[in-house]
Amino acid sequence: MNSIPIGQAQRLTAPAPFALLSVRKEDGSDNLMAVSWWTYLSNHPPMLGVCLSKKGLSGSLIERSGFFTLSVVGEALADAALACGRCSGREHDKAAEFGVPLESASAVPASLVSGSRAAFECRLVGQTEAGDHVFYLAEILACRGDAAVKQLFAWDGYSRLGTV
Ligand SMILES: Cc1cc2nc3c(=O)[nH]c(=O)nc-3n(C[C@H](O)[C@H](O)[C@H](O)COP(=O)(O)O)c2cc1C
Image (tube, rainbow, N blue to C red; front, side, top):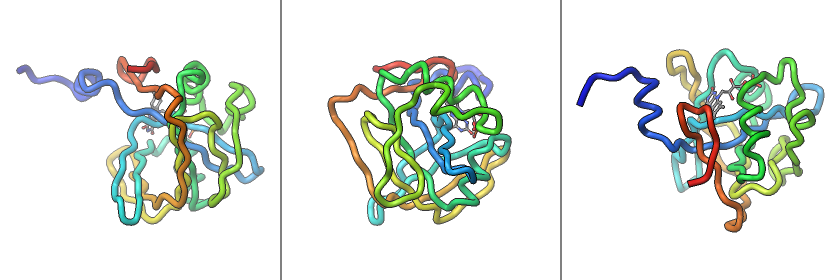
């Protein structure tokens, strides 16, 4: 093996998981963000974690709200979901602009992406700095799913979304 930069290592370990994170803004709309760096953390209680750049809007919204959702979206949303990873909610209403269908969650004040393979309603329980990112730990309060939906994954250094 040869020494390689971290970006190349991330390309070599594709496909990466992919989801849209939704968190409510102060105006009552939902901000959507593309996330590959998420993982399950615990079964009892059910928990997951997301690692978000300090530069984006979503982290500060999660810290203010204390809640978010994570939707593992299907192939029908490939173009829209990628677009949610290429601009900030500071300047865009991404759900409206990219036509992402939303539905109300049962346990948290943030919407789920309709038609997802799996979707989680999350309550923030902790956070820790990780270099240029912040890792948010959350309890899963509710989840929904549909096995008929084909899951999207991130490929080519997070530049492309596709199924396996
Ligand atoms: C496929 C893909 C995966 C991404 N995964 C992450 C991630 O795990 N963490 C992160 O901080 N940014 C990730 N991004 C970048 C954010 O989605 C992007 O910076 C977004 O503009 C942040 O939006 P916000 O400012 O509305 O929060 C990803 C982008 C793409 C295209």
